[in-house]
Amino acid sequence: MKTSRDSLLLVSVLSLCACGGEGGGATSAASSSPSHAASSAPAQAASAPAKTASAPTAASTSSAKAPSAETRTTLVKHLTEGRKLSKKKDFKAAIVELDKALAVAPKDPRVLAEIGWAAFNAGDLDRAKDANKRALATTSEPKLRAQILYNTGRVAEEQKDTDAAKRAYGDSLVLRDNAEVKKRFEGVGGKPEEVARLWSICAEGFGSTDDLCGCLVKKAGDFVSLDGGNATCEMAKDAPNLGDSRLSIARVKNETGSSTVSMLVAKDGNKYRAVAQLGEDFEPGAFGVHNELQLKPGELKKVKGKSVAIVKSLQTNADFNMAGLELCTYNLEQHTICILGDDKSPTVCPRTVPVSVEAGCEQGVEIDPKDMDAETKAMIDEMKANWKKSSGKLSYSIDDDGKLVVKLAEGDASLFSKNDTGEFSLLSLVK
Image (tube, rainbow, N blue to C red):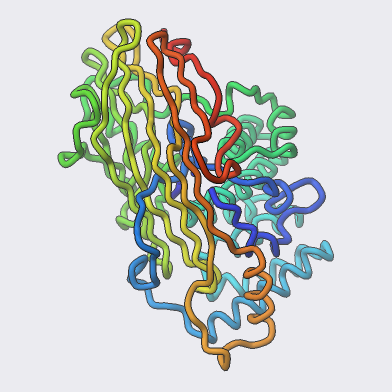
């Protein structure tokens, strides 16, 4: 999944993408820098958190076999032709070519995103919806997810599903600011305070963890990549001290085991509720795709008689895209801030602070020049012009009145959303 809620300027292959059109689709709607995904927001936007680690390699990120030179050549050939046809607005013909690319790389999110946009413009809304859903299930890279979520919103709008469109646009805005997406979001009734909304799935409160897990399994399709199967749920026995004994972790896993989402659970009196999605362990079986979540010990502080828990998580995401031509990494350390409840008021986690982000793209597998045709070389050369790595850190403080102040401490400000920094009243959401 990916989540996974969510920030590098992957202008590389995406800058080649014909998914945008004048209105902003997958390319132009995401022209501004992406950001992390707030994990307390709904899961489509959630991007997993990350750990600092040595640069991933093909061997370290997936056990899947590396694509052959023939596979790369076929993928690039049909993807290039499909993009050309999309630019000419011959979307039906573009889909034919893109399907040929998909045949050799069935889980490549960029190919799926291209198909989603072409199908939308061709009027095949069911195909567009399916392609977008599959693309979201195979990438955790925030910028690409933001683009796909925009496309998802366009499809939902066309299908007159205003609520779904608002969710998709809002989730896209959590990942990065963009004027076109904001315009669409407001056009379907979205309000600024609804962008980074509180987690709501299975948050009503249940009498036991079994009942809570039952709810999470029932609604798993909203935040786990199910791959057509069912989900399971169990309470983690190996989680660290999250800052308070009332907090625990529920792990929701798909049938194949490729995706495991960690949900933060709060016990309020005799009720258990899900209050935030912390991240995801994800290995879909595609070459070079590997996301890993780590939980770290949390801390607790008192604010006006309320217990405020700071839940700390780290995650490393690595994706080899385009049949291994490109390696993109996104590492996020984040602190989820929760105001603990009791039998009269529910626990809420109003803010997630991305305290550290490292993100970038670079060349993936080394390719022997004799194995590169002209189209592959041209695509790599164009991608190289946009490859970069950057990092940034935020600092924050919580005063005795519950005011949270978040500032840029160092590094690349474009890695963060405008919603990430500023002053926020934590207690304003407490009932």
